[in-house]
Length: 59
Image (tube, rainbow, N blue to C red):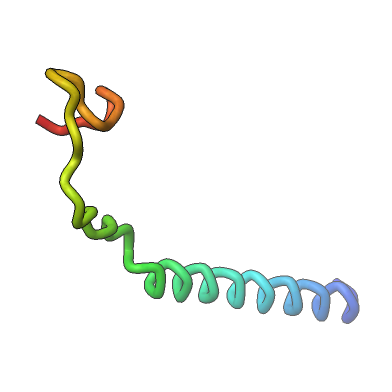
């Protein structure tokens, strides 16, 4: 291999390592997928109809 190809490969490897480390840092700072807190106001109902779509209601 010529010297310029080796330098290019080293630069690409360094960029890949920086991208992987940055991704891990962002995932850890984001809270690792924790769900947000529940709303403080109670959901309303109209008869037997929920205030949320049926796909989101947890029984």
